[in-house]
Length: 422
Image (cartoon, rainbow, N blue to C red; front, side, top):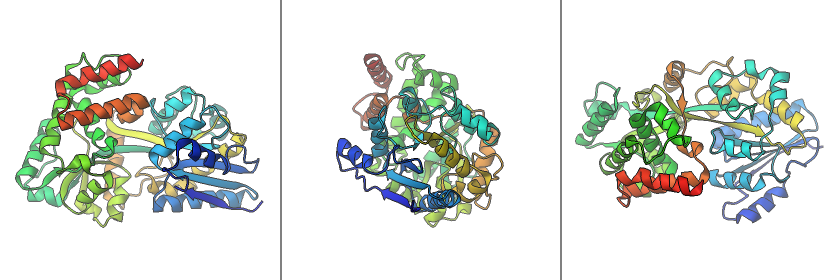
């Protein structure tokens, strides 16, 4: 068999209807592509990740003559739709790239899409390969689902020069101090924080952190797992009230009509002092011409000492005809030798405990320290909540920001949806 890696980037166009898109996918090498073929579905990759994927797939193909790896990429929403439509059918890939968390990865685990890989963890000794935070994402559903790839932390990135110009000498260690910093920046004529509202999940990062701040770790977890009502916790109203304040006073002008990429440019160009991004942002800062020495990052001062973050990575499809070959490929790409070459394309820290972080970018060093000292992770709510709940969560978030829902009505409105949909 000719050794080739086929990349169908975005050609499975988002403009096609879901059914047509899936039909197109099915014609291109799904799980029944043959004993020597692996099909991988994943998100559309940026240039550095394309190079990393090519290195991994070509290296595995060269080490395994006759094997062909087919990579199909889609945008975020198209990828979610494709996986949900393929669930329970033979139309899916051998390996799929997905997020961790009960609302996304857990949904597909519940549907039986993900293969429990316990036997491969024993065969390859993966329990000893991966870091504890990374493994926690794999075992959260019971058994072993997927292999770790990234554990992303998210915090507040800030422009050191703009902070200095505003007379800010100390980083905030409490929420009140963060608000004081925002006031100081605004008084100096600087936009305190840039976020993009056209993608709901970007502003959601602010709301998630406000809920963690005002509700605390235990109550926030109970809210997200339906163990307490959103209409019975006063902290929910406090968080939505603060969200409205940030929208009115501290976010970039017209943020509801700004894309995340454009809000990032405000930060890269020195037109906003802060933004909420994750470990992947370390490299993007360099790619967009900023000197990482002039950028800092601190955790949102929630006072819970938990990192706001999430995991993502490859799962093996339970319908795959080639689970052994899929496991062999995953063993190859998570080896220390390969991880040392590719991990920075996805984040600041490798999931392989033998691979040390590259501290030539000072932002990587900051994250190593944060992960070492954190007392757990709280996850983005679009990964905690079901798809339908997430959509409603975003609608209420946006309605509070536009003034269509009062902050004191937000919790009751969301709880009403949760009750009616359960």
